[in-house]
Length: 248
Image (cartoon, rainbow, N blue to C red; front, top):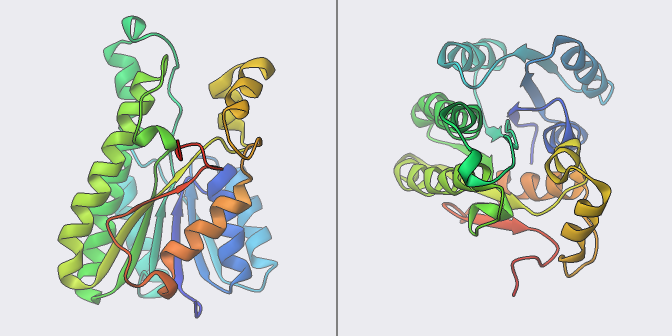
């Protein structure tokens, strides 16, 4: 990969942050976004320490005006967009389906689904006239299966995978690839919040054939691959990175 321009949403923690650092080590120019200015400035400084151009843009992917401004700033700064990683997401409020509400639905879907939709809408508007580009969405192992007490999160990630495949079919006509990475349990703050206790976390990890959670850096490696020319004939695919959890 030769110094691409990369945009990452939800870049301030976990998988997004690991991806930003991995792209920086490869020499990419970066626009990173999130909702916390202090963390954004801290990440930008760390990225620049690798000798690359980097800028933080505060953006809430639930708001189309923020997403449009994010893409506008990217093009104003770098003149093009080679890679977009749509990582912003939330675990929502885990619990029985019978306890979910319109508010809990909106809290999950506005970020996980609407956020991906709006991001791809504006990314593809940039990439289509370019005639090139790669979009990597972040799904989940739960994007292709069910899970008790996680109905809204599961449904939102199923939607991300459907959006990914549909966008890939549209974007192929103008030379843009769209894929998704579907991680299993990864050692992040989101996993801790989702499981809620050490015992539940250990029980979840026990179901992974490799008997451990993944590391954010391992997801970053998969994102780099999917974004790169090494994956030039891969589009519309959901790439599982889950320690064998979906093998059975």
